[in-house]
Length: 386
Image (cartoon, rainbow, N blue to C red):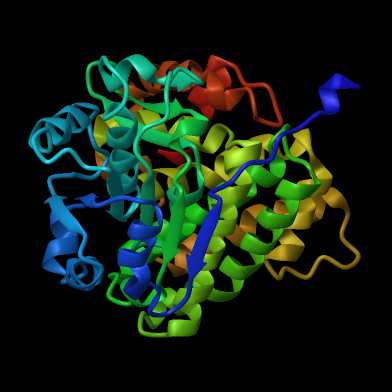
């Protein structure tokens, strides 16, 4: 049946391992590019992570320019700011360096170098007319998986929402992952981004669009995160744990790029946009209660998640094991000291109705959810996290 047809896509070249950053200049050359725009944020500069990037580009004799004014949860206007700054440089390649925000801005700037109009016109699915200049994504956090997705998320402060640009033209040409670049991540950032990766994997696994291929990537991601996130958080210099987390983030990104994420992200977008809660924290706040709501949509798969996370499930019914999965993610978030209530960010009962309305606008993600959701359901879930 036509309904069973699925399409699987990902970044065509993935380079991963300690020291991989040293080959960046050659990757640019292999793309036949001579002028590279590096899109990053002030924290990357302060941490000294730009230095090996510059060394590699200089060794390859690649001209480059740095745009470092990307903020967390970047507004769509940042794309225009970057385009204005690089107009005379005329980049032939864009390098995204950092967490999800710089990577998403890099991807959108790359397509806007070859498309007219404003990036906000392209929020939605398959609205970008033409490919942009080629991109190389260098993640410095193990969380978003943006290096292998055709998605970029931008904040629209007028609508108090985060909006997605979804297009195959956003797929990077190269994903370059070097765990050495993640060794200096502070514990809270490690926790939030790691939980974000876990949520990508869980949502891809339970999406109505999941298939055997996406399940393979999602399953392995969940197992790697369950085994390594606590270690990466508690001992940030552990290169094995950092490598495993970077791999898990990549695998989760591949899974959700094809299966989609679900309602956890739909709940995170309104609170992230309006209250400026970091994306990984916003997702983690909502994870357990959205999972609890979704259990009945696919008890068997949620039960499988408990086993992937190392919970003892022998002798348990699917319902009992599924509930154990909810307990497991709550305990993990607790061990990582991620905030657990909306009230910690100034959210009150008075905000609930508007926030729930914001959830219902994220139809792109709710369509993937294993259980249909109403405005009342959304409001009730928010209340349980207050």
